[in-house]
Length: 532
Ligand SMILES: NC(=O)c1ccc[n+]([C@@H]2O[C@H](COP(=O)([O-])OP(=O)(O)OC[C@H]3O[C@@H](n4cnc5c(N)ncnc54)[C@H](O)[C@@H]3O)[C@@H](O)[C@H]2O)c1
Ligand SMILES: Nc1ncnc2c1ncn2[C@@H]1O[C@H](COP(=O)(O)OP(=O)(O)OP(=O)(O)O)[C@@H](O)[C@H]1O
Image: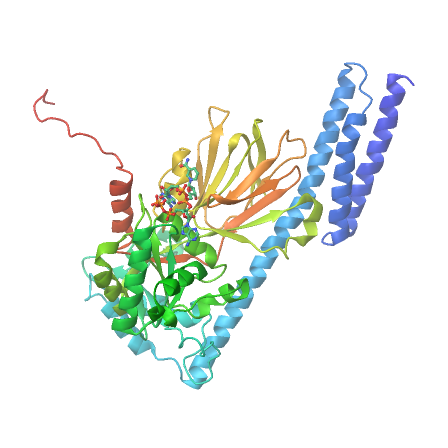
């Protein structure tokens, strides 16, 4: 067969395959057949590339083989577009259901009269919560912006018909979140929304906003999450448990490991509770009012990982080395806990990322896979491989870039001071709504880190022509191998980690970067020298 004949035969096969995939994707735009056919065609296209009869350096043959790659890439986009659309549709559906549920709860509140806080009460509460400018006019401010734990935590209405497991613990303490707001000097509070009066688009003046948590009834149940293998942590945990029982008559949950340790030590601890299986862990958020962590940042990450959905407020005591997210001094635990149990206190709502791994082999299972939630970041790197990582990245449906280097970090703003910082990313206040996109050792001179808005969905794809595997890890744990064709989809989770602040969100953040990282520490310039 001559080279021309071979080229013609190859073109024919290619045409057939392209026709097949185009036809199927037109037939059933959303149906699973499309995905399967597109995947098959794409695989066939790649399988076909090595068979392409390139026997000479003929430029046409080379071009043809490049065209096949383009076809394969296009088919890949069809498949991935559908996967992303499915994930997005599921998210919208979930949001819709939540909204409906919230509306229904509100309706019940009104009908049963079980809401303790009417508008008047709420306004009163808001003025109590507004710490810095008690004189500002609250109408339409905190009153309208307060968020109630009945809605947030999907809790039952307080009353005789509640469903929470009361055999073990009492009712979960309801609380209310409010914006602590600071109006301008003449006492006029301004909302931070965009107004368009008389056709002019104007961003109204920003107000200082801190989120304040006020208990509606005293919290009753505390979960302790503690760093393992530390005598000082263990001793403090035992002391705190005793104190909470004796002074506040609290119910106490600990991890199974800690429960065994405490019971082996003293039968006094018979009252503590724990869990036996994953099902019970899933129900924890319905019983726990407050989580106390004893350890460093890793312990806060660990505590966050226990909650795959809503998370109760977390009070993090510092017993680690750096303690970026652990503002409470363990020596003053009595005073700190008393303040938190009494409330109100500032909280930082730390956003988490929900990550879905989509296997090339199981594209249609995206909806059944449980998302993995991270508080810091998801990292996609080269693992043990000595090859460059090759990753294609998309933001919603737009192509962002190809990463060629050691890997990529997709980080929350809380994680901005962790691995992302080490890879050259910016430090971002944890309440800034964004997602950080930070390359690890990119082999290019111009790959600067990005910060994207919080509402985007990111997709990182290992292309079929990648030389090696990639590895994803979640908050530095749980490594998963990603092969060619596999993808990782990330977006902000609706379930943040609410962490109690020692002072307030900004003061705590600045204190952490000063004390923990010695940010911008430099000897002061001497006074004597040339004058300007
Ligand atoms: N080169 C690096 O800097 C690097 C490499 C791997 C992992 N990490 C980080 O370690 C985290 C896991 O933490 P770990 O404690 O389980 O592991 P670890 O014990 O290895 O601790 C890593 C260090 O990161 C600090 N850290 C964790 N989260 C932080 C945050 N949000 N802000 C500032 N510092 C933070 C911890 O205090 C600790 O000193 C990962 O999520 C990742 O961000 C960093
Ligand atoms: N409750 C827990 N169960 C199992 N492992 C835990 C738990 N809490 C923390 N860890 C793990 O123990 C390790 C060390 O914990 P942590 O980071 O809190 O302490 P540290 O290293 O002394 O403090 P820092 O992070 O401030 O340097 C982390 O890798 C973390 O994942």
